[in-house]
Length: 156
Ligand SMILES: [Mg+2]
Image (tube, rainbow, N blue to C red):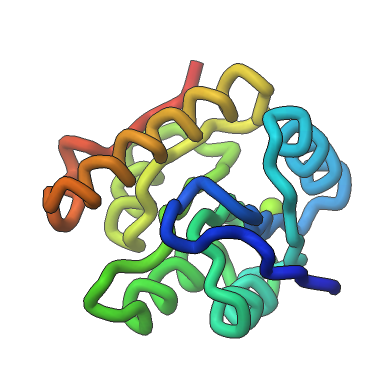
């Protein structure tokens, strides 16, 4: 994969989005929609590749599929949260076909910020990014770590 880190990393939703998704069709669709919304993307094909790409380039916004081979999105997000610095890590948007509370709790436990039920649509993606902007603003205002109450569910 090729990565061009030209984005301004001080704004979590500026610059390039890292899309971690094992399904080629889903990946293509998500990248296409993000481009439509004005974001440039880099892609990774499983959690391990996503983790390594984040380590190398420090994306501030990650779309993370939960169910992937090699390393799941839950594991990758957990690893990122364990490695991120004091200044806080990326915003992580979980994408999953499962909408149960159990899966949502698992996303929260893994440190993911926003939860999008598949299939991902342009409307859901737009809402998820709006929530990310709100979370980023909260953090910038010194809101500290997000809590369960701010965990966004974009399921409709
Ligand atoms: Mg998958």
